[in-house]
Amino acid sequence: MEIKLPSNPIARRWLGLSPALITIFIFMVMPIALLGYYSFKPADTYGGVEAGFSLDAWIQLFFDRDLDDTLIFDPVYLQIIWRSVVLAAIGTTISFLVGFPVAWYIVQQPAERRNILLLLVTIPFWTNLLIRAYSWILILGKDGMIEQPLLALGLIDESLEMMYGNMAIGLGLVYSYIPLMILPIYASLEKIDFNLIEAAHDLYADRWAVIQRIVMPLCLPGIIAGCILVFVLSLGDFISPSILGGGKKMMLSNLIQFQFSSARNWPFGGALTMLLLMLVALGSYFYIKASRKSVYLEK
Image 1: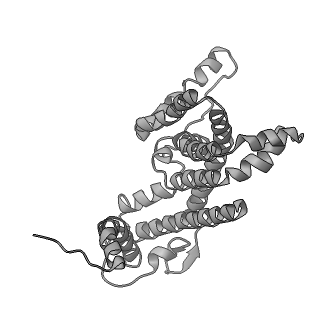
Image 2 (image 1 turned 90 degrees about the horizontal axis):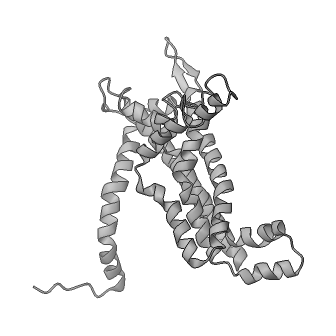
Image 3 (image 1 turned 180 degrees about the vertical axis):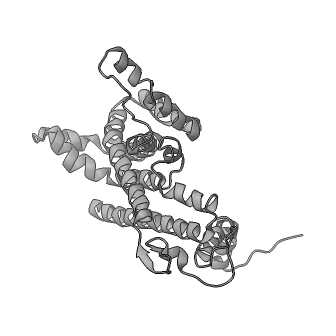
């Protein structure tokens, strides 16, 4: 049986895109739309939602109800959201400060050595993220790899209590996602014409001037891409706050999981999920805007 394709080029194009569009709609758009729908429903006492329309889930982000049903401003959830954004921003900043020199060092090596170094950068991705997070317990935990030498040398008398705090979570975020900072920056640095750098040195430019005026502007798309990748993934990270934070320093992803499981408040969990998606979309918007600006400057 012969299948006749439409002669209209626009129809043929949409027909070719239809499998991907259907997949995206079923597995991405529908779950997000369902969560958004749940966020505007009354919560069922035993989990799920009830019939009707309610803004209680969104009001709960900012207010709590007193015994007489009076709304009282409660910043507890805003503090968790703010902590998530701050830790993600700090993790992104540290990843950039460490990742840029690493990418610059790799791009200056011979081709054979570059492949080996890039392999070393990507090796952590071969290991489960959960196992990598648990490995930090052996490093930062009580009598761990850091504390044992210090105790043996008499430099400290008691545990440094490095686990279950913001510092441990931040280290976990940096360790987990720093390869996603190095690789985009390396891809941008690899395209730079090093004759420009030699010309700058001939014109008596020092290293800082070369990096500031030539290297950084030319690799700006890679820097922006790396920062967005690390920030977005850190913002939604669940493993590091759960294991390295010990549940004491909750982040947005942990709060969402708690609402759907223990608290059984599905509307509030849906509202938090939509808020997380808004923050991700906002970050993507700034990435697109900055990318267009960098392209304009290159032209």
